[in-house]
Image 1 (cartoon, rainbow, N blue to C red):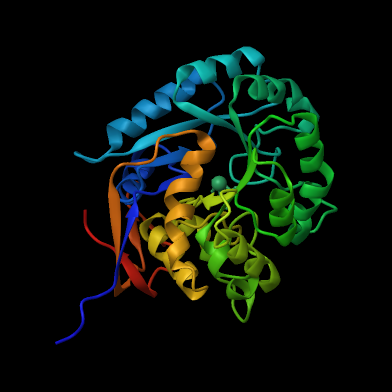
Image 2 (image 1 turned 90 degrees about the horizontal axis):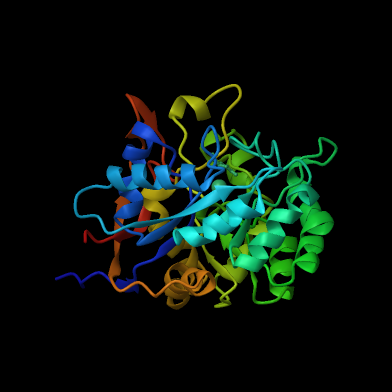
Length: 350
Ligand code: DOR
Ligand code: ZN
């Protein structure tokens, strides 16, 4: 007789950083998240961006309409900050009750960021209103200067801009999204309790060697780009530290297979189908499985001021293979993160 597989029951987790897209693409990726996560911070980088409360309301309605029957999932919406976001729009966002944050994209930094802020000072009136209203700022922390090497863009953002924003708005709640460097981790650790960070599964599990050594693996290309091993180790230490400043944000960012395997391939890892098992693997590798629940299910809720989720999910220690390809949108295919690979933990069917 074989022993029953190990099981790990967690409070249902929240995904504090998620791209759902829209239309048929959204309908094909939403079930993977809604099956496991109770809530998600939904990023606003549609085309055009979700820059107004009216647009966020309509987007939320479309997400809710696309949910599978019986799904228990709450989308927490974000507004896309631009050079012209007004204090009035911020006040309306807060009053909505379902807009949790505004997302700062430096113009040109990543997918659909052309409407982003062209110089952070241009968003200062909006940031002041957010600080007043108690709306969270989610930061894509990379400079876009062509002179700055792609691998240095996060570190330079932390040095040039982040400290200044934190000093100018000391009560503003800030989430440094998808931290990828030791410098970002150190900054967040040294800041007050109003500054936190999300960490993705790919940045916990892979260094840039996994993406670039020998062959280029486009499905590991995301922004901020994977960094060298020393940074990955700093992220693992932060995620498994038990500090409430670090929490789960997958940055699951679906792009069709053809848009990734291309001469000019898009940035983004579609991690939703295997996200929680991937985090479990990273925590287990570090001997920290007992800290997974706080990272995945408690810290984001505490930071955002949400009630703790009431349901649970169960991880079972049971090898399974992530599908190498899945259907996406209107007849396209998509390659999930770790597609074709065997993982040690799977989420038990609810
Ligand atoms: O890799 C990324 N993909 N980084 C981002 O910041 C955006 C995202 C996307 O929307 O595809
Ligand atoms: Zn993102």
